[in-house]
Amino acid sequence: MSRELVGRHEELSHVERFLEAAKEEPRVLLIHGEAGAGKTSVWEAGLASAQASGTRTLAARPVEAETGFGYAALGDMLRDDHEAVSVLPLRQRHALEVALRLAERTDSPDQASVGLAVHGVLTQLAEEKPLVVAVDDVQWLDAPSALVLGFAVRRLRSGPIALLVAWRTDDGAAPAPLELDRSGLADTMERLALPALSFGAVQRLLQQRLDIVPPRPVLRRLYELSAGNPFFALELGRGLRAGTLELEPGERLPVPLEGVVGTRLESLSASTRRMLAAAALIAQPTVALVEAVSGAHQAAFDEAERADVIDIREGRIRFSHPLLASASYAAATPSDRRELHTRAATTIQDTEERARHLAFAATGPMGPSPPSSSPRRAGPNPAVRRRRLPSSTSAPCGSPLTAPRATACGGPSRRRGARSRAATAGAPASSLTRS
Image 1 (cartoon, one colour):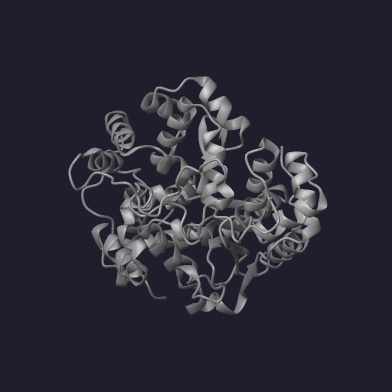
Image 2: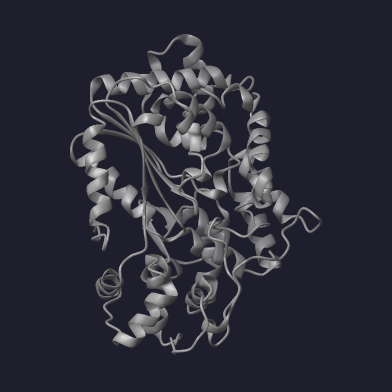
């Protein structure tokens, strides 16, 4: 059942207006904000609205664990559109089919041909009916998908095509992802920032989602600590409801988010925490796969769902928020992580992912060490813990969630890392980075 998005009426109206305008010409909407601001919720609401109106949608929901797998996001978007792919020129069709692993791979696909193929598919689909191309958490797009998708959309000149993008960033004025602000779409690109919720909206959120109405002084303190961030407000509210958190006047600001999240996970059974750690280190976790890796029984999945840590649909597992995945992995001991990686390597069929798990299962230098910035387990009063979790990341540096993109933790080297990954995928990154 869908939940009302409390305090986001103006933002949802903005998305509706954008979708309507995109039925006339190509347009871009960047939904941006800090971790926990509700970007995915607004993005999903826009996607659902487009689908309800009969608009065709192509969607990708990349996660950080998949950034090292070439064309993973592109495959999510186009794998079922065989008819549109089949009418492409032979070279483009073959390149795209190889990229999507629909054809035997004899060599690395030509990225320019893949980009042209994606452009051709989008153009063809938009001729039939309005099209929405939706990407959640665009910062986690694997490098080859980002290159060819950017190449394709920057060349859109006409047609009813909307690009709906959710983007985690603390700087809404930063250069747009996919270099969209350096293309012909720059004039029709909109940026939708998600500001902090109002005091009243946070109160309604706690009542609707958690069925609690704290006394006004406590509610005021919770609002100050959360800074109007809906995810943080809910985590603090859960701590209040469980009795593990006291928001006493005079406490210094801010309460670190990882302390609250860690306390929430510690309330779960050991078997459930082990199951969550396994789910966090697998690129595309399913119930069957996580059962095989962690040895968990159905009760563990049920407990995690009741705690609203994960959501299971059609056997696929999704964490309610990336920070919960990060904390679940970081809470496991190094030896437990190595064991889970070993079991994952013997269970998973994908060659690239198996290699990654084998690397992290090693006991030598390539094996995982305790992340220096990972969420720690909270003590009896997590409100007094003072370390911050950087809002620009959802996983600690050194965890398998960041392993395929190790330079991401190094600031300025992030772009160089993306280029090197693209080159490894089979073509120089520079061949597709500019329109």
